[in-house]
Image (cartoon, rainbow, N blue to C red; front, side, top):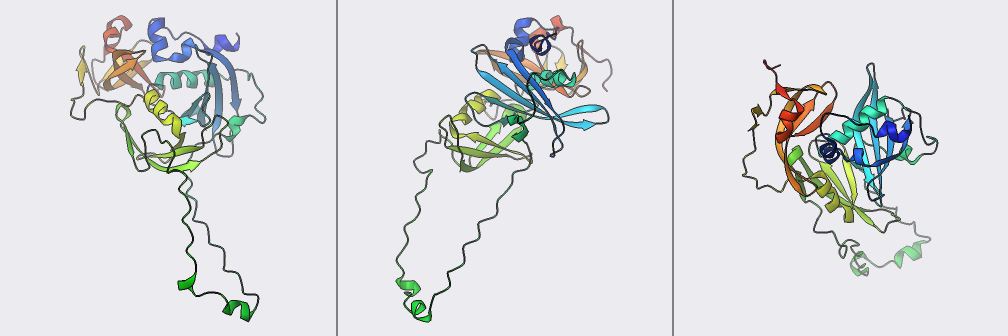
Length: 314
Protein backbone atom coordinates (compact mmCIF):
# COMPACT_ATOMS: atom_id res chain seq x y z
CA UNK A 1 0.00 0.00 0.00
CA UNK A 2 1.49 3.37 -1.04
CA UNK A 3 1.41 6.67 0.82
CA UNK A 4 -1.57 7.85 -1.23
CA UNK A 5 -3.60 4.71 -0.53
CA UNK A 6 -2.69 4.85 3.15
CA UNK A 7 -3.52 8.54 3.64
CA UNK A 8 -6.58 8.60 1.41
CA UNK A 9 -8.58 5.65 2.75
CA UNK A 10 -12.39 5.85 2.69
CA UNK A 11 -14.08 6.04 6.12
CA UNK A 12 -17.40 4.73 4.85
CA UNK A 13 -20.77 5.52 6.40
CA UNK A 14 -21.59 8.83 4.71
CA UNK A 15 -21.67 9.33 0.95
CA UNK A 16 -18.37 10.32 -0.62
CA UNK A 17 -19.55 13.85 -1.49
CA UNK A 18 -20.66 14.58 2.08
CA UNK A 19 -17.46 13.07 3.49
CA UNK A 20 -15.36 15.36 1.30
CA UNK A 21 -17.38 18.40 2.40
CA UNK A 22 -16.84 17.54 6.06
CA UNK A 23 -13.25 16.31 5.63
CA UNK A 24 -11.51 17.95 2.63
CA UNK A 25 -8.44 15.72 3.08
CA UNK A 26 -10.35 12.90 1.38
CA UNK A 27 -10.38 14.93 -1.86
CA UNK A 28 -6.78 16.15 -1.60
CA UNK A 29 -3.64 14.36 -2.79
CA UNK A 30 -1.36 13.15 0.03
CA UNK A 31 2.33 13.69 -0.70
CA UNK A 32 4.43 13.12 2.43
CA UNK A 33 4.26 11.75 5.95
CA UNK A 34 7.05 12.03 8.55
CA UNK A 35 6.95 10.81 12.16
CA UNK A 36 9.36 12.47 14.61
CA UNK A 37 10.37 10.93 17.97
CA UNK A 38 9.66 12.79 21.19
CA UNK A 39 11.45 16.13 21.27
CA UNK A 40 12.82 17.96 24.29
CA UNK A 41 9.44 19.67 24.69
CA UNK A 42 7.86 16.26 25.30
CA UNK A 43 5.85 16.01 22.06
CA UNK A 44 5.84 13.37 19.34
CA UNK A 45 5.19 15.08 15.99
CA UNK A 46 3.49 13.73 12.86
CA UNK A 47 3.87 15.80 9.68
CA UNK A 48 1.48 15.55 6.73
CA UNK A 49 1.75 17.33 3.37
CA UNK A 50 -1.27 17.44 1.05
CA UNK A 51 -1.95 19.14 -2.28
CA UNK A 52 -5.52 20.41 -2.60
CA UNK A 53 -7.59 20.37 -5.80
CA UNK A 54 -5.83 23.53 -7.03
CA UNK A 55 -2.40 22.03 -6.34
CA UNK A 56 -1.74 24.31 -3.33
CA UNK A 57 0.40 22.94 -0.46
CA UNK A 58 -1.41 22.30 2.82
CA UNK A 59 0.75 21.16 5.76
CA UNK A 60 -0.33 19.75 9.12
CA UNK A 61 1.67 18.97 12.27
CA UNK A 62 -0.09 16.78 14.85
CA UNK A 63 1.41 16.92 18.36
CA UNK A 64 1.04 13.83 20.59
CA UNK A 65 1.93 12.88 24.16
CA UNK A 66 3.19 9.35 24.77
CA UNK A 67 1.04 7.52 27.34
CA UNK A 68 0.80 3.98 28.63
CA UNK A 69 -2.08 3.42 26.19
CA UNK A 70 -0.19 4.82 23.21
CA UNK A 71 -0.13 8.23 21.53
CA UNK A 72 -2.62 10.84 22.77
CA UNK A 73 -3.30 13.75 20.40
CA UNK A 74 -2.90 17.21 21.98
CA UNK A 75 -2.69 19.90 19.28
CA UNK A 76 -2.78 20.25 15.50
CA UNK A 77 -1.01 23.07 13.62
CA UNK A 78 -1.76 24.04 10.02
CA UNK A 79 -0.42 26.28 7.31
CA UNK A 80 -1.39 26.81 3.68
CA UNK A 81 0.96 28.15 1.03
CA UNK A 82 2.05 30.87 0.68
CA UNK A 83 1.56 31.36 4.44
CA UNK A 84 4.70 31.52 6.55
CA UNK A 85 3.35 30.75 10.02
CA UNK A 86 1.49 27.72 11.37
CA UNK A 87 -1.79 28.30 13.25
CA UNK A 88 -3.44 26.03 15.82
CA UNK A 89 -6.69 24.40 14.71
CA UNK A 90 -9.63 24.11 17.09
CA UNK A 91 -10.54 20.57 18.15
CA UNK A 92 -14.23 21.47 17.73
CA UNK A 93 -13.94 23.61 14.60
CA UNK A 94 -14.58 22.84 10.94
CA UNK A 95 -11.31 20.89 10.87
CA UNK A 96 -12.42 18.46 13.60
CA UNK A 97 -12.98 15.52 11.22
CA UNK A 98 -9.68 16.20 9.45
CA UNK A 99 -7.86 16.29 12.81
CA UNK A 100 -9.40 12.95 13.80
CA UNK A 101 -8.52 11.57 10.37
CA UNK A 102 -4.86 12.60 10.69
CA UNK A 103 -4.68 11.34 14.27
CA UNK A 104 -5.95 7.90 13.24
CA UNK A 105 -3.54 7.76 10.30
CA UNK A 106 -0.52 8.72 12.36
CA UNK A 107 -1.16 6.04 14.98
CA UNK A 108 -0.65 3.27 12.41
CA UNK A 109 3.02 4.34 12.16
CA UNK A 110 3.59 4.03 8.40
CA UNK A 111 7.04 4.38 6.87
CA UNK A 112 8.37 7.94 6.55
CA UNK A 113 8.46 9.32 3.02
CA UNK A 114 11.00 12.01 3.95
CA UNK A 115 13.98 12.11 6.28
CA UNK A 116 13.22 13.49 9.74
CA UNK A 117 16.77 14.82 10.13
CA UNK A 118 16.91 18.58 9.68
CA UNK A 119 13.20 18.78 8.84
CA UNK A 120 11.57 22.21 9.44
CA UNK A 121 8.89 20.61 11.67
CA UNK A 122 11.51 20.20 14.40
CA UNK A 123 11.27 23.97 14.83
CA UNK A 124 7.47 24.07 15.04
CA UNK A 125 6.27 24.19 18.63
CA UNK A 126 3.28 25.03 20.82
CA UNK A 127 3.50 26.45 24.32
CA UNK A 128 2.92 29.38 26.57
CA UNK A 129 3.70 32.79 25.21
CA UNK A 130 7.08 34.03 26.37
CA UNK A 131 6.92 37.60 27.63
CA UNK A 132 10.25 39.28 27.15
CA UNK A 133 11.47 41.63 29.89
CA UNK A 134 11.97 45.25 28.98
CA UNK A 135 15.54 45.90 27.84
CA UNK A 136 17.84 47.37 30.47
CA UNK A 137 18.91 50.89 29.48
CA UNK A 138 22.65 51.23 28.85
CA UNK A 139 24.65 52.87 31.65
CA UNK A 140 25.61 56.48 31.25
CA UNK A 141 29.17 56.83 29.97
CA UNK A 142 31.79 57.83 32.50
CA UNK A 143 33.25 61.32 31.88
CA UNK A 144 36.76 61.27 30.52
CA UNK A 145 37.78 64.20 32.71
CA UNK A 146 36.43 66.60 35.27
CA UNK A 147 36.50 69.44 32.74
CA UNK A 148 34.57 67.44 30.14
CA UNK A 149 31.88 66.68 32.73
CA UNK A 150 31.54 70.39 33.54
CA UNK A 151 30.96 71.20 29.87
CA UNK A 152 27.91 68.89 29.73
CA UNK A 153 24.79 71.10 29.48
CA UNK A 154 22.22 70.90 32.32
CA UNK A 155 19.18 68.70 31.69
CA UNK A 156 16.90 71.69 31.03
CA UNK A 157 19.16 72.80 28.19
CA UNK A 158 19.57 69.42 26.47
CA UNK A 159 18.07 69.40 22.95
CA UNK A 160 14.84 67.46 22.63
CA UNK A 161 15.17 64.15 20.85
CA UNK A 162 12.62 63.54 18.07
CA UNK A 163 10.14 60.74 18.74
CA UNK A 164 10.84 57.49 16.93
CA UNK A 165 8.39 57.01 14.06
CA UNK A 166 5.61 54.47 14.63
CA UNK A 167 6.30 51.77 12.06
CA UNK A 168 2.70 50.49 12.25
CA UNK A 169 1.05 53.92 11.82
CA UNK A 170 0.81 53.56 8.03
CA UNK A 171 0.52 49.76 8.02
CA UNK A 172 -2.67 48.31 6.52
CA UNK A 173 -4.11 46.26 9.38
CA UNK A 174 -6.98 44.89 7.27
CA UNK A 175 -9.56 46.51 9.59
CA UNK A 176 -8.09 45.04 12.81
CA UNK A 177 -6.34 46.75 15.71
CA UNK A 178 -4.44 45.87 18.88
CA UNK A 179 -6.85 45.26 21.76
CA UNK A 180 -9.65 44.09 19.48
CA UNK A 181 -11.56 41.01 20.60
CA UNK A 182 -12.46 38.10 18.31
CA UNK A 183 -15.35 35.78 19.21
CA UNK A 184 -15.34 32.34 17.58
CA UNK A 185 -18.95 31.66 18.55
CA UNK A 186 -19.31 28.09 17.13
CA UNK A 187 -16.46 26.93 19.38
CA UNK A 188 -17.13 29.14 22.42
CA UNK A 189 -13.67 30.69 22.09
CA UNK A 190 -12.77 34.32 22.75
CA UNK A 191 -9.44 35.83 21.80
CA UNK A 192 -7.78 39.24 21.80
CA UNK A 193 -5.20 40.82 19.51
CA UNK A 194 -2.52 41.79 22.05
CA UNK A 195 0.40 42.93 19.90
CA UNK A 196 1.88 43.49 16.44
CA UNK A 197 5.41 42.31 15.79
CA UNK A 198 7.81 42.37 12.87
CA UNK A 199 8.92 39.17 11.20
CA UNK A 200 10.71 38.12 8.04
CA UNK A 201 8.66 36.45 5.32
CA UNK A 202 9.64 35.50 1.81
CA UNK A 203 6.02 36.12 0.74
CA UNK A 204 6.03 39.86 1.44
CA UNK A 205 4.49 40.03 4.92
CA UNK A 206 6.42 42.23 7.34
CA UNK A 207 4.17 42.22 10.44
CA UNK A 208 1.98 39.75 12.25
CA UNK A 209 -0.62 39.84 15.02
CA UNK A 210 -0.05 38.15 18.38
CA UNK A 211 -3.41 36.68 19.44
CA UNK A 212 -4.15 35.30 22.91
CA UNK A 213 -7.13 33.10 23.80
CA UNK A 214 -9.00 33.75 27.04
CA UNK A 215 -9.07 30.12 28.15
CA UNK A 216 -5.81 28.82 26.62
CA UNK A 217 -2.22 29.16 27.76
CA UNK A 218 -1.09 29.16 24.13
CA UNK A 219 -1.20 32.00 21.63
CA UNK A 220 -1.11 32.37 17.86
CA UNK A 221 0.96 34.54 15.57
CA UNK A 222 -0.85 35.32 12.32
CA UNK A 223 0.43 37.50 9.44
CA UNK A 224 -1.65 40.68 9.20
CA UNK A 225 -2.72 39.85 5.65
CA UNK A 226 -3.88 36.33 6.67
CA UNK A 227 -6.11 37.01 9.69
CA UNK A 228 -9.22 37.49 7.54
CA UNK A 229 -8.51 34.12 5.87
CA UNK A 230 -8.07 32.45 9.26
CA UNK A 231 -11.37 33.82 10.52
CA UNK A 232 -13.14 32.62 7.35
CA UNK A 233 -11.49 29.19 7.67
CA UNK A 234 -12.44 28.86 11.33
CA UNK A 235 -16.04 29.76 10.52
CA UNK A 236 -16.71 32.66 12.87
CA UNK A 237 -20.46 32.75 13.37
CA UNK A 238 -22.06 35.97 12.10
CA UNK A 239 -25.44 35.32 13.80
CA UNK A 240 -26.95 38.00 15.99
CA UNK A 241 -26.15 37.68 19.67
CA UNK A 242 -29.85 37.34 20.61
CA UNK A 243 -30.59 34.50 18.18
CA UNK A 244 -31.71 31.45 20.10
CA UNK A 245 -29.58 28.30 19.66
CA UNK A 246 -31.19 25.17 18.24
CA UNK A 247 -31.49 22.54 21.00
CA UNK A 248 -33.46 19.75 19.27
CA UNK A 249 -33.79 18.34 15.78
CA UNK A 250 -35.29 15.12 14.39
CA UNK A 251 -35.84 13.70 17.88
CA UNK A 252 -32.27 14.28 19.05
CA UNK A 253 -31.39 16.85 21.71
CA UNK A 254 -28.22 18.69 22.70
CA UNK A 255 -26.34 17.03 25.61
CA UNK A 256 -27.84 13.56 25.04
CA UNK A 257 -25.85 10.47 24.04
CA UNK A 258 -26.39 8.70 20.73
CA UNK A 259 -25.08 5.61 18.97
CA UNK A 260 -23.27 6.20 15.68
CA UNK A 261 -22.74 2.96 13.67
CA UNK A 262 -19.12 3.60 12.79
CA UNK A 263 -17.76 5.26 15.93
CA UNK A 264 -19.93 4.00 18.79
CA UNK A 265 -21.38 6.15 21.58
CA UNK A 266 -21.02 9.93 21.37
CA UNK A 267 -22.54 13.03 22.95
CA UNK A 268 -24.34 15.78 21.00
CA UNK A 269 -22.57 19.03 21.92
CA UNK A 270 -24.52 21.43 19.69
CA UNK A 271 -26.71 21.84 16.61
CA UNK A 272 -25.10 24.33 14.23
CA UNK A 273 -25.56 25.98 10.86
CA UNK A 274 -22.46 25.61 8.69
CA UNK A 275 -21.60 27.26 5.38
CA UNK A 276 -20.05 24.45 3.33
CA UNK A 277 -19.11 25.02 -0.30
CA UNK A 278 -21.40 28.05 -0.40
CA UNK A 279 -24.47 26.19 0.93
CA UNK A 280 -26.04 26.28 4.40
CA UNK A 281 -25.96 22.90 6.14
CA UNK A 282 -27.35 22.12 9.59
CA UNK A 283 -25.26 19.60 11.51
CA UNK A 284 -25.12 17.75 14.82
CA UNK A 285 -21.77 18.31 16.58
CA UNK A 286 -21.01 14.93 18.22
CA UNK A 287 -17.99 14.22 20.43
CA UNK A 288 -16.71 10.63 20.85
CA UNK A 289 -14.73 10.52 24.08
CA UNK A 290 -13.26 7.05 23.50
CA UNK A 291 -11.76 8.11 20.15
CA UNK A 292 -10.97 11.70 21.23
CA UNK A 293 -12.65 13.09 18.12
CA UNK A 294 -15.56 15.35 17.17
CA UNK A 295 -17.80 14.61 14.18
CA UNK A 296 -20.26 16.85 12.31
CA UNK A 297 -23.26 14.95 10.96
CA UNK A 298 -25.93 16.61 8.75
CA UNK A 299 -29.24 16.58 10.63
CA UNK A 300 -31.09 15.53 7.48
CA UNK A 301 -28.94 12.39 7.07
CA UNK A 302 -29.21 10.77 10.51
CA UNK A 303 -31.87 8.34 9.26
CA UNK A 304 -29.71 7.19 6.32
CA UNK A 305 -26.65 6.88 8.56
CA UNK A 306 -28.48 4.83 11.19
CA UNK A 307 -27.76 7.09 14.16
CA UNK A 308 -30.05 6.31 17.12
CA UNK A 309 -30.64 7.37 20.71
CA UNK A 310 -29.50 5.39 23.71
CA UNK A 311 -32.41 3.88 25.60
CA UNK A 312 -30.87 5.07 28.87
CA UNK A 313 -28.60 8.08 29.32
CA UNK A 314 -25.03 7.27 30.34
